[in-house]
Image (cartoon, rainbow, N blue to C red; front, side, top):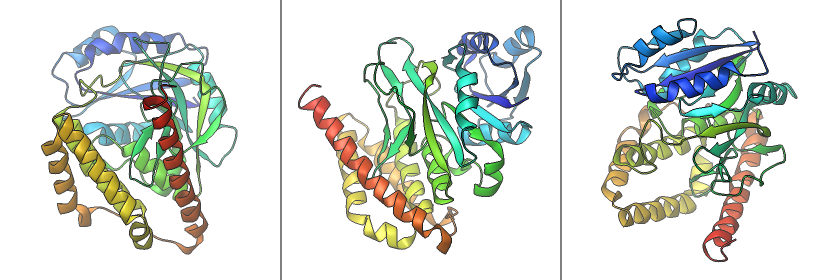
Length: 326
């Protein structure tokens, strides 16, 4: 076996059949599946036992969140590569084939992000990988753009863990998904960490997967999600940036948090975002920073340049969409 598909599940019984049926039609056969269930109460486990008894299912006693669920799956896998797949996805038949080929192009590649397409609006992209900016904003690249865009393989900041492949042995070197995150931004965090260690994250435009989006959380914006992202954003910067880099970026980071706070006030989630930031500040010292090593210094400079470049890209893209309607 070359790859293990790990599907975290929490009350996603209604998504499981389409996802698993799509996996059963893959042109690539050297893979297995592990489903990690976060104490679902909707009959997910009974459904799996009855209809897919051949699939390995790990049942957790409580909802530990995305990060711990996928970590358990990764540690139970024996294959060189692991593919994380949201339960509300349906991969194209050649999806795994393309993903394995993409990650095998170089041992320096830690992760590969697929081309995620909006399930109910397949003319639009859901994600073409993640970008991170000097403002502290994680950008879902390509969201809402015509599916005809982003057709070239490219280097990205981090892979979207909703449908991505990872080199399993690298986790032992850089660490696993941070369970303090519970959910949200954990994929940007681990992609950031991999870059510090000198690995690459790439994008494969040929690996297509259709995604419902917010299948577990229920909506693009809700109290829980806004609070978690506000908190985890602080964790992400604190853990991955050395002190000098935090100081250097302090003004744009502050502006980034301020603009987001004003945005969430506008849409009714200001208190939730502030509560997340407050919780993040209270627990900041408990977070494990990436150890600073002098041999990683060129990587830090490269990352800083990428953060600035991604900010410029996002600004141009935002003006193109909002002002010029392009």
